[in-house]
Length: 323
Image 1: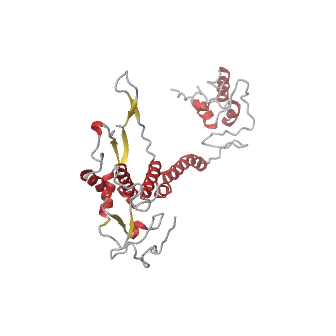
Image 2 (image 1 turned 30 degrees about the horizontal axis):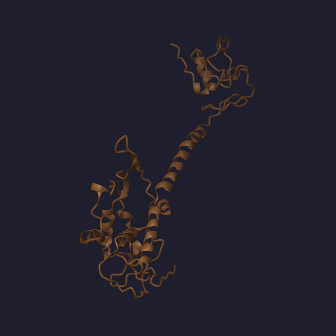
Image 3 (image 1 turned 30 degrees about the vertical axis):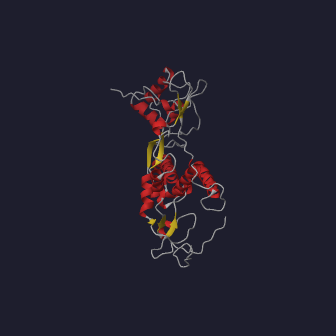
């Protein structure tokens, strides 16, 4: 039984197709008179392997190359571009270059692999993250969660709201009022900004996470709104000067965080105006984990803020800064 060759459609161009009857007759003629196969490749524009298989299998189909409506099948001095088995030279003897073929086949996958590795390193490596994020030793405690905010109106009011009293003052203080944080030398070393060493026997370096400073400021503004702060005092630390500082610190913090959660709109009924819906899902950092991280590193006792350390491991004891 004669074997039928499949047509490689990827190598066909417009106007190409199954060989015409005249070409079939030519092939049959080549086979009948025992002409050399390389000469047949020149006449029909096919590769050496295709012509060989054609003569062996009755040549029911060939894979036409570079054949248009007005193109001759007689291509002089043509060297097949895609022949994987041989390269034809003047004496029509095939010279095999399998190693070149293997190299060509490896170039594309190797290039893709290298591009993937480079992209992975840029996107997910620690170096790339450090270029985007300001280093903080508390990053190890960061864990995201989805939280639905309350509207703080009506039945959605929280226990943090209302005029200052013993109960809500304690709640506010519990958010941040557990001292400042002690860092180890290794935790402090990568920071972008220097800080002072803790002036006690345990050593380390003193910091306060920004979130706790912001909560302190918000609590101070809360008290000021309800009259617990002397707005006329421009000298007292807890006076109007401090409040003004806190307002702008919160402005910067809110703009820095830039929560992009979509706040939606609705109506209570079809005959009422639309209003904002505050009870939407936000992606938040789990506050309790950050709070616990800072609590575990708290400096419980008052420190001597006037004592200068000159022999600390990082040499930051004499660090000074003037705004």
